[in-house]
Image 1 (cartoon, rainbow, N blue to C red):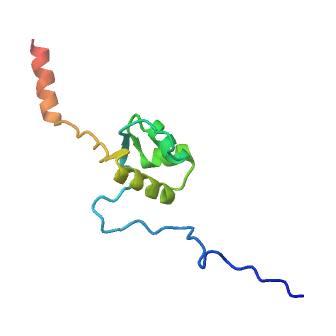
Image 2: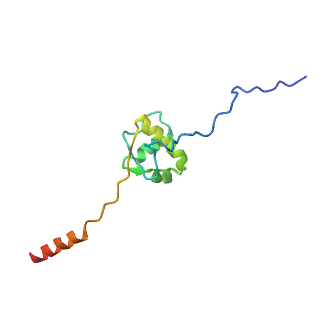
Image 3: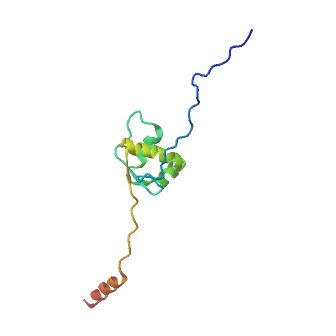
Length: 116
């Protein structure tokens, strides 16, 4: 008696990776991009997106979210991009460092205040 061979139900295995980044994309997300939640988590949402929405009540960078979630940024980039596309998150440019004021102007103001 021969044992029947097991047949695969799916001819190809499911992909365990996704190629989602386009280096020429102008809206590309990087480690310093800030994310802000547009709403609170909803019922039926996955655990990672729900945790990210709770976390992003205040602006957080991708690097901070990655550290808190203990997820690699390559995975997090895909999750965050999907959430931005779905309208769950808002992506913002990082806040630029404040430029230093002109030293001569500060000296002039200081001397003017001393003369008062």
